[in-house]
Amino acid sequence: MKKNILFFGCGNMGSALVRGLVRDGWHGKYHFLLFDKVRERAQDLATSCNVTWVEDPLLYPPHFVFFAVKPKDVPEAASYLSSWREGILVSVVAGLSVKELKEYFSAPIVRVMPNLCVEVGEGVVPVHFSQEVPEEHREELLFLFASLGWVFEAAEEELSLLTALSGSGPGIVARFIEGLMDGGVKIGLPWEKSLRLAVQTVLGTALLLKERRMHPGVLKNLVASPGGTTIAGLHVLERAGFGGILIESVEAAYRRITELSEKVR
Image 1 (cartoon, rainbow, N blue to C red):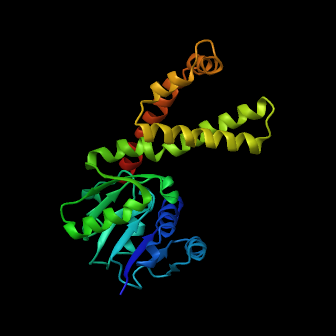
Image 2: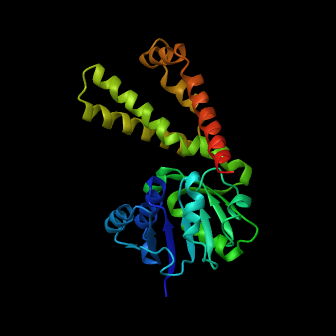
Image 3: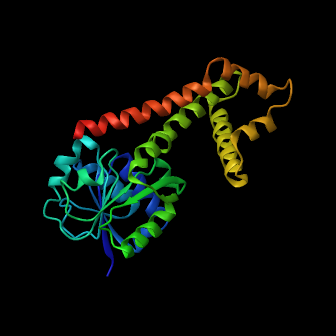
């Protein structure tokens, strides 16, 4: 008999997790159950992924609960699961510690802070297990998460730091790609072709760095020929403080995570 996995919350992150796991066929090995306070959101996602949505999150006893709600919504959302006793809670809530989550749940708790790229199997998936999680469930979850991208165990105090970079990173990278696209349009390329060029360039660069385990500064120096086109473009970026702006954006994301978690306490 298939074990049940309840996905509680079908917003951006919850949906990305469902799609990423469905993409790798896990809905054939587990019974995926989708619940969201906005019924249509769960229904639409369930239909597109060929899985089940439920009006009552505890209609079928879940083996794992993937709890993907905003920090401010935790008290209300947890009330839906107040009678749940057996299983493992997998929290995707930014900023709330295991200790704080235990105020709402009696089940063993796992914290995971993925980014949206899990949808295509190229996410970053830091995982922290509370001491109460049995070893067999740790192995089961790590195997499950492995289809979503780079999975690694992390100390709980690292999670907010990791989320500031990898969680917010896709938005920052998307804005960078949009800027490259706009640059292509400005010099005369159609936006569709310019976007494809920008996306493929970023994808190829990231893959090259990953495959060769190369520091980005080394690749930059390989591309930037003396007196050439690349160094001319880099000069404009440096004059505008591009590197410092990126650093400050990650710092701002980290500060915001801290602020959001403080509001729940």
